[in-house]
Length: 97
Image (cartoon, rainbow, N blue to C red; front, side, top):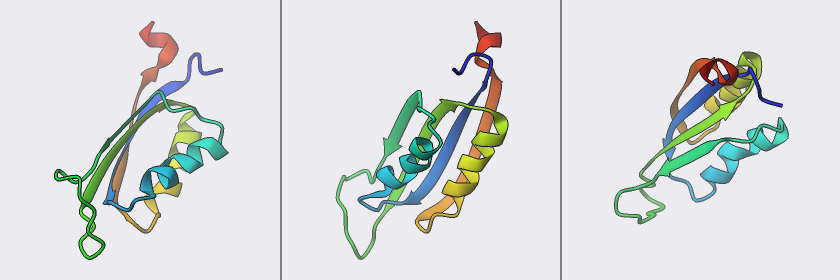
């Protein structure tokens, strides 16, 4: 149940590896957190060049306790293709209703 839990948005900038989306979502599945929104922006031309992977930006919105959100962020932040990441938290889902 997510009523009353804070909303979070995890923003990740990484190398555009073909399996990166799966790797980013795996920690959410392990901790039984269902993202409410996922947006992935890949290379503008859509091409994958193994010699120059390009850039990918992912935004994952979800509700969870602050401790769990920070655990997910920490786990994703240390992934090899991740260049930068940050977590933005907002008011609880119940307070916005």
